[in-house]
Every structure is written in C-alpha cells, then in structure tokens.
Image (cartoon, rainbow, N blue to C red; front, side, top):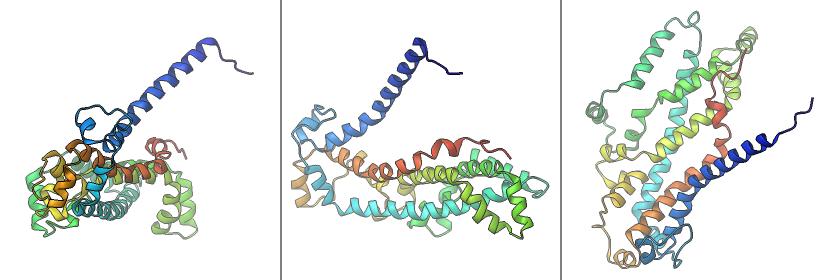
Amino acid sequence: MTYRKTSLDYLIDSIIHVVLILAAAACIFPIFHILAVSLSSAGPASAGMVGIWPVQFSTDAYKYISSKIEFWRAFLVSLRRVGLGLIINSVMTILCAYPLSKPMARFPARKFYVAFFLVAMLFNGGLIPTYITVAKTGIMGTIWALILPGAVPLFNMIVLLNFFRDLPNEIEEAAFIDGAGHWTVLTRIYLPLSTAALATVTLFVIINHWNAWFDGLIYNNRPEGYPLQSYMQTILVQADFSLLSLTEMELFAKVSDRTIKAAQVFLGMIPVLMVYPFLQRYFTKGLVLGSVKG
C-alpha cells in the first residue's frame, strides 16, 4: 500500500524544516559574528557596528595574537592536556565499564561498586579537600594536576557500561567457548562493536578538557602552565595587560579589547570545530541506551 502525503503532512514538514533552519542559524550566527568582529577594525568593533560581516577589514588582532608567545604556550598546554587526558580517561572508563557490565552472578560485588560510583558522581568532597589532595600528591603545578583528579569520568563510564550491557551475551559466550579470555573479549569483540559509544565519550572528554579553565587557575601557580582557557580567562576577563612589551603595546593600539577577545575565542574553538563533525554522527547512537537486543 502506497502512502500519499496530504496537505497537512506537507505543512507539518515545512514547519519542521523552518524550525530546524532557525535553530541551526541560531547556533551558527555567534560563530560568524565572532569571526567578523575579529576581522574588523577597532572602531567599528568597539562601537558594536559589526554583524556577521567584517567592517573595515583588518587582521591586526591576529597579528597581535601571533606575537604573544603566552597564547601559543597555553595552546600547546591544552593540546597536551587533551591528548593525555583522552588516553587516560578512555583507558580508565573502559576498564571500569567492562567488569561492571557483567551480571551479579558473575560479579557479585557489582552492586557495591555501581553504588559507590553513583554516590561519587552525585557528591564530591568539595574544592578545598580536592585542592589539598592534589597538593599532597606532589603534582601541583604540573599537567597531571589537570588530568588525574578527573581520570575516571563517571558519566562516561555509565554510558559505556549500559552500552556494554546491551550487547548480545551470545557473542561473549561463544568467544569463551573458543578459549578467549576477558582481555580478548574486550579488545576484539566489545570495543569494535562499541564504536558509537566510544566516539560519544571521546567527544565528551575532548570538549571537557579543552573548555576547562578553573582547575588551571587553582592548580597552577605559574602562568606558564595555564591551559588556553585559563590563559584567556586571566587575560581577557581580568584584562591584565601589564606584561606587554613596547612592540606589543604599539600593536595593541591598533586593535581593541573586543577584537582581541573575538580573535582568541575563534582560534580557541577551531580544534573542537575540526573534531566535532567526525564524531557528531555517532553522538545520538552512542547515547541511545538499550538499542541492541540479544
């Protein structure tokens, strides 16, 4: 039987398309606006005359940023943080999620550990105990102070745990009959079948590490160790330009605080914009729990 759309169906489809287009425009407009402000002259940008197209095109803001070694140093710190954090978070998440995905008959202590992680996700010791713990471990002022306190992302672990639980048990049982161990089952069966969930938690980890700024301020006593977002918070929000050299002051006179902020924000979002399109297609599938039935 062939289904034919009625006039009401076409009207509903049109409304949905319009709503989606408006939602997409609302997400894209701020990006184009920030880019336009960063490529405009100081006067129009400060006067709020810039929309989504540059006014009096100028690249002075980017020239100013390229002369700031502190910006590129912070950029590299953030890249290191994302790289190391992604490896550690992924390994710890997988190693926690795999055993907790087993039934009580095979892992009697499962309920205790699940309850422990749930309590830890909902409640924490607070800022001061966490700071003291980091200080006592001797990692204060290092890159590890930004990574190890959040080595096990509990929300990501729960997402992956539920995805593992929904995989067919028959595949695992067949592997055990053939002589495979848990490590073989995890690396050769579970992980290849969990591409969508792994891509989803990978996206979460990258965005979390790249956008984090507060821990960089409290765990680093030297500005040289700031990640990019912490550096941008101190320089842009607090507007601390006391360390500018004479050459930088001359270049700074050609730009405005707003164009510099826009240029640094745009450069800061480029890595995430480059990664997101490749992982976004797995996002919905990875979050839909219970989609695979044995």
